[in-house]
Length: 192
Length: 283
Length: 78
Image: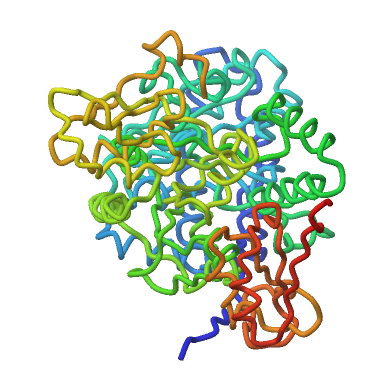
């Protein structure tokens, strides 16, 4: 006797409450205002140092909270991913496990409907930010010159590095493109 | 040159083969829907849409054959921007590379066999199609499409599984699901395979392009046993009585490599289609 | 194909017997998260999209428990 399959009423999307919590805590408007305040009257060298300090801390907390809430608010897509990882002996946890948390982090704080994933395979995880709200905010608050120094890159780089470290995945993180020059920022994690 | 490679290949990666370019295997897992946006309905996916587009054109065979021929011609000329999904035959050696680089890889039921033979594949011993990519994580939305579910496989398991179907005589076809995004490697069989049938019987090229390879026979090694004749789904091979050997028509050959993997004396090899001036524009 | 055939996916005799594979069956009633019941009358429908490949062997007509299939070829011209 064949079974007729009937799935439970699963949700495959990210939990909206989780996204809201992250959006409130890691509002790009707040962190860019904090940065704008901190660099008032400072020299170029000091601006870079302030940017590194502020955005590294922001990036680290942002991704750690995304990891924490991402586990607390699972969805069916994630459950099946965990089953798939388990079924394949954990061999292919990279790139989809980190990809999920990056998608949570960016989709919660940026006005985008998808995070463009350029590569996701056993070797590389590459993603792109095209219309970045952090960059736009910096441009408004600190002027184009400061924005183009991309102090915010420290947030993305730290987030990506922290994520892989916390997931115990050995990966080398690099920035492959920058908004002022290329029109988008691109980050790549390569499995070491 | 292969027009899909021209559009979606990277000359730096795997000789520019579009289906071995990691970019064509990558996609986001989540999408934030607008508040008023409803979840996608069944059959709104590129695969189903392509099937309906073909179905609409097929109707004209009975009502207006001239228009049918004209529409096929136009659709073929539109290539990837046309109304059909893109598919290309690949030999098993390249299918191995695909399951090594794409993730996740899952076996699942074949939609063509469900539609054309009411043949159900309900567990991992029966599944004959290979799904690739993040879409496999959400199959439960439409169990009618993925009858029985999907079975995730590590690369080594996937390769063994491809061998199983290759031995039985299935042609591997790499398929796109929207643009150049690769969503699966089908294991196909004429006549129930829609893609092979549409190409061989009706001339719809986009869904079943010829592979980058073509079979070449070594007459010194061929014993004329006829195994390859049985395995060819494209009518490219026959036994040639005059020579007492097998004859392969390279113009009809799709380069699937089934004759090569079946040949007991290794008399057949696959050579690069583009190395032959008479075949380099035959896709 | 015509009215009497209500459970083509469950029966599948014509689909599997046709040497030319002219038939196609598809679910016309699909719900999210639920597999269509092949035994539910009318949930699946049968078509013959490849009927231009039919040779008139009549195997399907003989197998069909509902006498739902007819084949029409134009008469021979005198």
